[in-house]
Image (tube, rainbow, N blue to C red):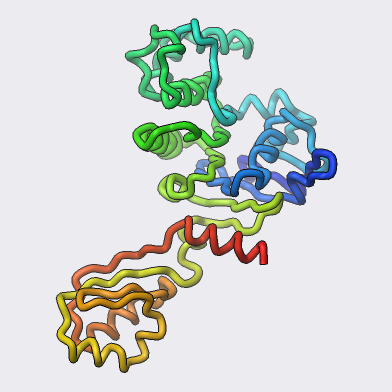
Amino acid sequence: MTAALEIVGLKKSFGALRAVDDVSFSVEAGQICGFLGPNGAGKSTTLRSLLTLIFPDAGTLMVHGMDVFKKRRKALARVGALIERADFYRYLSALDTLRLLARYQDKRVERTRMMELLKWVGLEDRAHAKVKTFSQGMKQRLGIAQALLHDPDILILDEPTNGLDPGGMVDMRNLVLRLGRELGKTILLSSHILNEVEMVADTMVIIHKGRVITQGPVQDLLSRDAATVWVSWQEAPAQLLEAFRKSLIPERVRQLSPTGAEFDVPEKDIPDLLSALLGLGFRVTEVQRRRSLEQLFLKITAEADA
């Protein structure tokens, strides 16, 4: 199967600064891929190269097997994008904004289609309101609507939650999920807000100092090594806690109390941990997996800096 997006050996420098250094990854059709990294890691440079907004020094960038520089018009017709903060003419309404942008694209887009897009992004009731009355979250949603005008099957979203309050982040997260799950869009989502990506992405690519340092399915990466697991139990008597301390289990205990403990264990070893606890006589009431994308990200980037 041909990947929806494929980047091979991408390099880009700005003077003495190597912004992107031999970046390679691909995104399969229908996947939501989180493209992660700290500010300055090379995310926006990669996305701008993919959209031909800047020219790389080396590398191949493909959309459904088409080189974006050799078949630019045909390749990018399959792609919609929102790069960082959405900004539009303040005196136009949301509907007029979409009309104008459709004209820029030399596309005939029916009013019903534009209203459908505004409904999809939650702006149907503000179709005739001027952009100057919009919050940043509403502008971001309008930015998604403009990215969908020509019905692309691929969406590239660069920091779509920039400047949003918590409510706006939730709205954007739900919108991304709907676009991926209900419309089947392939989405490359760049962000530094890791917990948001963790809740929507199927796969992820982590970039640091211009290089890809890890990539793969989100759940595989989160479960490949030690996770933080909190196990709650009915309040244990002192003698049971003493027996616990004398067992081999405490080697991986980070925190212990009469009603629970925090462990560092690989996900595959959690059943064995629970069996050992039950064997000692603990009456387990709850197990919470606490390994987060943030923990993984900090661990991997620290190792890359070492």
